[in-house]
Length: 195
Ligand code: SIN
Image (cartoon, rainbow, N blue to C red):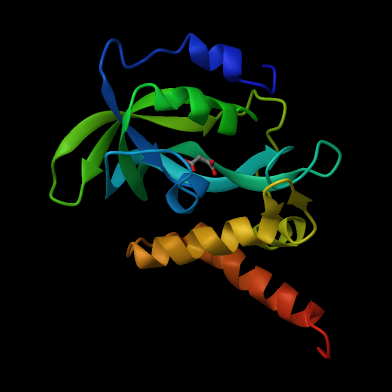
């Protein structure tokens, strides 16, 4: 599948003629909210797990030195926490541009904190996209992240901002927090004056 998903997403009009749609954000969409929305609230989706397995050629890396960003991996029993935004359907044009490096729109059931549910859309980078990097140990992922930077900034900031936001939302994610702790050690060893 081509790495640029703009065209593919245009034909994935999964919200029919609805004026408003729930968007489920689980990565940078949680903390870098550069799109208009009507309402935001914590939500989770079942059967999916967040992993730093997608390559970033644009925001947090380059084509020759891709960064690592999150995607969702199917895992029965898993629960992925994030933030849901109620947006006007027209906002997806802007979101498709932002998520164009391998992410496709998928429909999914969201569960809110009060137990109510809604169908929404989320962006997932599936293993058949050209930028996909796949599994590596959390330490290898941390080292990789510390070596990448793209148009939106340092790859390490993507991870640290995500970990901070998940903590603020009260959401546990062992994968993200394990990489965060490796990254903090790597960065502190690099600090001026570090032994
Ligand atoms: C998301 O945040 O929901 C998708 C991945 C990203 O843009 O970081």
